[in-house]
Image (tube, rainbow over all chains, first blue to last red; front, side, top):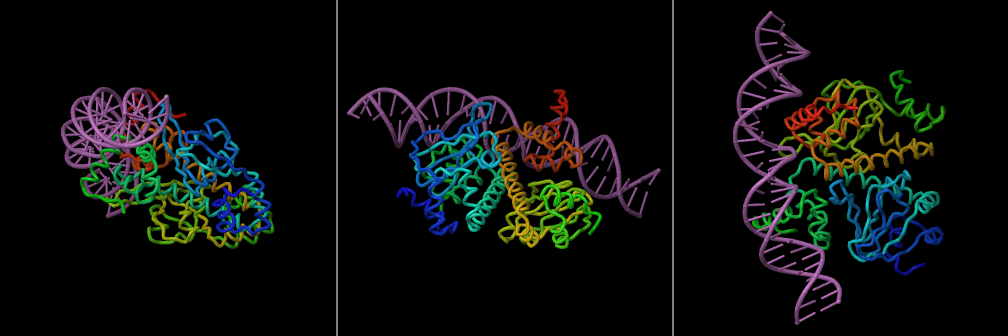
Length: 200
Length: 200
DNA sequence: CCTGTGCATTGATGTATGATAAGTAATGCA
DNA sequence: TGCATTACTTATCATACATCAATGCACAGG
């Protein structure tokens, strides 16, 4: 077993509650990889064969529209899984890019692994279920914000939700995540500074 | 068994592949109800105790923001399930309303029912999994549209996706779903008519 | 048959955010 | 150390969409 997979190990043992013998079985099914900043892990048109568990570093998934603009769907830092779930699950071509914002260590999780783990362990099944439900909840909040909140409120919400990312991610990517231009985000920040708004 | 539950029966037997003996067991666990147009089935602050399977008619779920504006999260017509999944699953207070756009016949699905069905039947578990994954895929598409597309393109996408709803749902609700005002939608439609755009 | 109520349309006007362009600051890399 | 690149800001103007107000229509209920 790779000593670099500490977080992933913890994830399996603690969160998904996998016992030692099963763990030994499952850990053989995953792969470890070092990803360089900027490296692309998935492109539109490809089927997403692996979910990426982030040991450390930072990934993102995003689309590129007809005008060539990027729209960030998700950031994933330590202990997050980045993937195109739909593509992986339904075995369809993805319309996402996934790439690395920082040098990143990832564990590659195949659907093979997921099936096996689900068969072996009821608690893994359960944990997976919770992860799906969390994903849905998260997406719903985001939809609601996009429908109802101004750029400023969306940004404030982002800061509150992801204080760590706010520091690590370049602003133009945050803007892309929020659905505004970098210039607008700059203005929003100026406004907030002026109003004496402090994160935390 | 209630003869009004044809669609629900079909859903269990055909889609979720529940065999007759299990079906007889499960069907006792659900309730049938007639909902009047305008009736509210869930309010913010309440925990969502039931998912609503629509036998016929039309439901919607929506939030109301600080300014009192409604933002429609989901429409549900025949054979759809309307629910606050997060609230139901995590047993948390919801922030959604659910109400009836038309007189509607629903089957009430409790988490009790879901647990039981999952225990009894592997194919139900499987079907439920697929439903979750579909939900995620659907939400992701919507997020991407909200991030990247103009009001006009979002409306065109809506028409293509839900030609039936386009006719049954008042325009101001479609506007709310799209994240624009009814006035804007009216203008978008005018534009499209002018450009000789025909649905289908 | 009138009349109230809700929905769609239209026009006038306002505003948040986009587009473009340029400047400044930070970062990497030779 | 310095130059090039990338990130962020600022300014200007443009535009999609919101807001407000008025009107027309349809249909439900007395």
